[in-house]
Length: 272
Image (cartoon, rainbow, N blue to C red):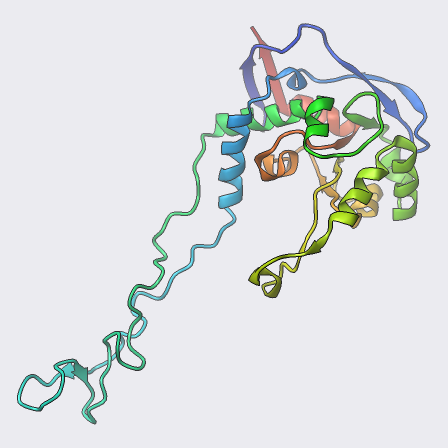
């Protein structure tokens, strides 16, 4: 889906970045799409993140009839017993204080957990988060460690086929000056505090590099996906959850040239 955004750019000058091959050699330059000139809106990015994050939450609640499926009835007065619903054998049912009765104040499944956001606002938030990935100060402020002159990093299309193992991916990231951020994520990985460690989320892993490739089936996508803190996305699946984890913009991103062109087509920016 193509989004047409009407914005006032940060600068009239169009930014160019270097294209690297599989050996981290410069093989040319590419002009960044106009979407990277969109102003960074931290408030909008935060709203979009909360909307995307809460949409994955499962509403929790009891069955409304839990503890109430019984034929018990109150015997009335004259028996010297509490007038609660009882079975013919005298066992109390239904009430909170009875064994097998309903819960006093159970969680209600009707509770709305998802935050809402307009589609155009969400598209603007993604464009704003994309623009933040090209600002070195924002990326460093987010905690990423790297040694490059300009952002984002753009790779030639041939790299998607040549880099087909984690070893080759590591060698490339070392040459590009990005491997230190993967090491930061590995060293920061630890056991979660609290009961979450018993519920399938035992470890906490800091986010490192985001690779945006043309297809998730490319060899490079499979080579980097198990590196500490690394995520892989395509222009079609890109969201604020990838670009601004925790609602904080400025993630360290590596694009392929083809993926960068597809992003430019997806977000059509009209300058005024």
